[in-house]
Image (cartoon, rainbow, N blue to C red; front, side, top):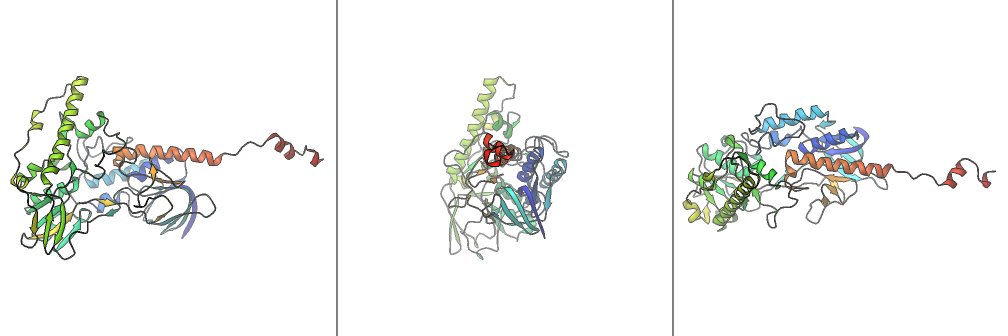
Length: 433
């Protein structure tokens, strides 16, 4: 068991932890990065086998290093992303310790700093950065009881179609994960049903530019808060198969059966909200709004980008959209598996400080906690829309590192002694004669 002191402990060895380490190292701040498994472990073992990044390689990377094995407009596989982070850790010489889990962080009583308890001993730290990211605890809504179908699993536990029992599969959630998993299962020959909730649906590309480029030039990556009512709306976008725009009508044409939001279960019957049409319509409106903004930008700046009228053509509404199914008898429909692509929740049980609201959410501004000396990094909308992306977390880490440097200067400050104090120290006052 080791006992040591370091100025900053960074908890988490993914994109947030590595970005934090780079900026602390550049400012010569002593620090450790603690990772309970391996670098980028969630990319390795908590994603399905065929996953690729949702952004092109020119965009979804750190500013200081390109992907060596992915074309700029290509989409890195999950293994390539993990290897990229490993290479980056070597490049910046990150002081990272893998296989070390943080079990508790608490403030030192009556002294500055924190005790960081780990599976490898206790570390003393003046500052703590929680860089564990947004994907900490898989969330499965308590709707369908255990045993109602043969298998229920979260998308983080899904690997490939062969993993699942024979029979139809219901995928709940139509963000990037749910759409890609449903499409993969359909291509494997399964009957697939997809429960679609509210979502944003950007074009994968438009007028020869990826949607990541459009969000950049339109200033949308820098939005500092989601639109009112859209805090938890998912984004339906995919880099699979070379990158394609998600089109729910096309998915239905391919054989995927669309349903509304999954709402309740009773006596073997699962019911769905009558909101499928409205959810798809709102996604369409989001899609068309970005096309409009892109066209206006092209005209305003006189860019020579090819027009793409086909992008505005809408397929006919499939029957599942015009006559939505509102309930299903799971057994009668042969549904043996439910895949819940329903997101994640934060888990900071190990962080025993007064830094959270009543719902357990970090109380912070741009990663700076209300608890002095504690910082958060890698969370969605930490400072902007792009905060949870690789490049976005790099910029957030720079801000947090600068804040730590400022606090270090305050803590190091010692006032110059007053003139009388200097005379006493020199033995020149009357009392010293």
